[in-house]
Amino acid sequence: MELSWVRSALGDLEDAGAFIAGDNPQAARTMAQRVGEAVEYLMEHPALGRAGRVRGTRELVVSGTPLIVVYRIRFDHIQVLRVLHHARMWP
Image (cartoon, rainbow, N blue to C red; front, side, top):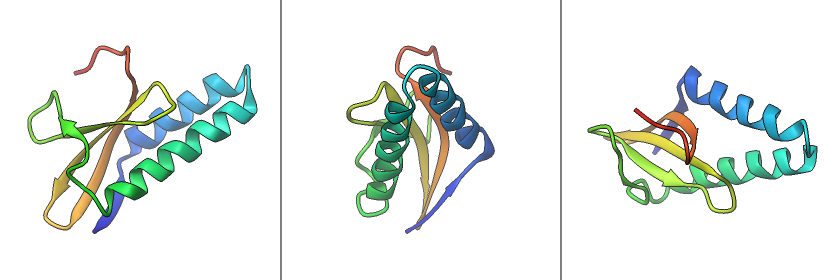
């Protein structure tokens, strides 16, 4: 499996990290690490996330964080589309 991140997903992760780092830099690093590990795990288990709210997507709840990784699977490729707070209204 190949993996790629779209620009908006990277921006989402940066924004979440910056927000958390304002109060707790270590928590921000831990959150980023957990997201990275969860996404890497998808490469072995791409169907792990639940069916997404947007057709053709899947959503992975990142354990120990308030974040959901929105992604899609295309043949042998996983594309991370967004990294959203679970309380955020999306789409």
